[in-house]
Length: 328
Figure 1: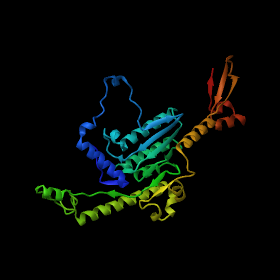
Figure 2: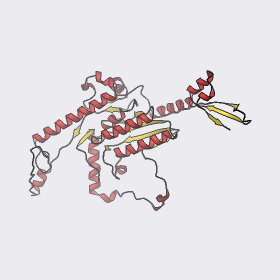
Figure 3: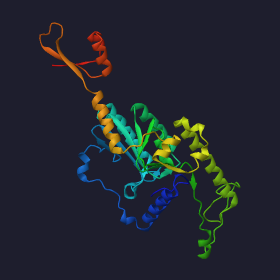
Figure 4: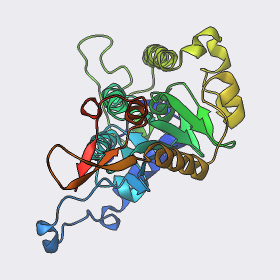
């Protein structure tokens, strides 16, 4: 079952998309059968994360759709991404980077935002992955809004397409009541509480002013946490009034760059991927030569791949002090 959050770091449309997905499942669960493991799958190694695609050593981590803290087998049906799925994908990317399978990572965002609950834990995972994979980049050619922008801002660099949209820094909370419906159906409900602030917005009684005030206060606190997080990730925003960028507004490419919410210039994803591939190819060119090692009559090829080590070799540093490999 899809879990509906109490506090939403995202757009209202994104929240309603989650409500609609939940309603669709409740109306017809049989329309969404869980994926069953085939008997032939028992001998197969676990597949890589479906959030990851790799192109010539550049890994693309797709963070799309509403973001939820609770994982469900329904996520794939409704285009939802969970925080646990992102966490696992980050772990896989670190392993593949350390194994040399990939040389760059771009987090590609297309999300209206998501659940406030659990985002701090995912933030820690993002920061750990960033430390393990230098130069990780955030990117959107679509939307990186609210919780999506929270995550994208963790990267040292956040690039956008000219029509990429970022921002929506704020909190949405929804309160609803079944009171009138139950009354029309002739169902009597009495809410009994101990503690005057306990469950003030129970769906079985009319909405109360005290309950709504409490929701507003909690939302304001969460909004403050959000702003604090963004200014820690992008300190240049601290000099701007929060009314310019942190009241739920969204901004397209160049305007986001001008405000300091993203880094310029604007670019497409294809151009960004190709640049990373070209830079890697240029930096990985190696210098090699043949020589005799000691009394061994067999010639060895000495390969020095690092530009820094190549510079040492050119400067006359003894080979024993240079990182290199020997190939027969």
